[in-house]
Image (cartoon, rainbow over the protein chains, first blue to last red):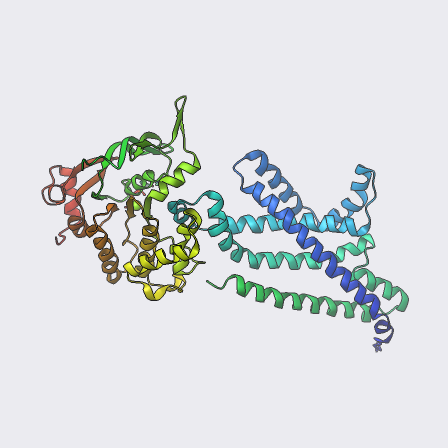
Length: 221
Length: 257
Ligand SMILES: Nc1ncnc2c1ncn2[C@@H]1O[C@H](COP(=O)(O)OP(=O)(O)OP(=O)(O)O)[C@@H](O)[C@H]1O
Ligand SMILES: [Mg+2]
């Protein structure tokens, strides 16, 4: 049986897909920024010698590492509103799910970067009379950042792909818009091929940008 | 000038868990003294040096710098406020076996770092001092190099310049040539020798016994967690009185004085 490809009806509705792509980028960008903030707080808690700070952070991180991402989306969309007696729109619920998930993973990236710095660096700075804060700011963090870049980028790509789960909450991301176009055109092969290519272009572009950033941040190595 | 000890160590003990490394050390350093510390591997030479600038917390004992007791004693327990330790470390420069330069900063920035961040000097002034220190160790042409691109000998000289930049009252060297290829040892020892000629107060942990002989005004043989034998270079290295010291020196074989 010969299938006759026809992208026409899909391309006629390309504006719907473009909007979806825009929403995907938007939710990813917002979640990365919030995820970084969550990750920084969790990483500082994890690095703290005080157990009442480090243990809750560890529990939070392990919870996220050991549960499926889609459950977090459902929990924020269907469960949290019951608890708080307020309703969250799909966008807010998806952002909460994505930024807490990525925050848990970013925390491990940040912590890993800090603890990977050799003891000699701490000692070199301490021997000069630097305070802990100054050492962190001038010596440890700048070096840790360049080591965090590759895993950070990898995590951000995961997040970008996970945004597709927001479609299950009827958030108008690229996948959701594709489902809408499909409902109108009954051309699943063309629709989903098109958005696969759009995701591909998005991720390849992002990885090129990331490579540039990485080269700048690791210049001394 | 009546020499009073610049550094005064009393009853120093250091334990790592059950491992009792330093077992009650009393020690003073007068201005201008150059002390070489020798001893077997794992005898606690590094630990002793690191206790002096509080890179290791003392298990027992007290240290006075210029007569001032370091640490606050209250109801039998001693605490070490960060601010005080930073001031102490500023006054005791340290040079490590592994250099510990900051790889993300240029050579010049490495030497300026303490001046700017710790002493709070304006950059132009810090730069002037750093350039002078680098000239002194013979690295005028390496200002903008990354430390990772330098030879071990050059890195160690940068590390010495970095320590000197802070104008420390005492310099602590922990086996500064042990991680260097043999052909690079000389250039570092020459710099240390030059510092000796300037009558700087220095403590040097080393396995270079020949160098220690010429360098030091006092030699300490550390064994079993105590200063087993202390004396002039001639006394300790040429005519040691303790069998343990004689044994140690014999195992090092002939070294040229
Ligand atoms: N942070 C630490 N925790 C536990 N044990 C330690 C620590 N630092 C040193 N030690 C132990 O203390 C002892 C003395 O170590 P130290 O490094 O001071 O010896 P050293 O005389 O400098 O030896 P080397 O000549 O090999 O440098 C060793 O047995 C070592 O294993
Ligand atoms: Mg040692």
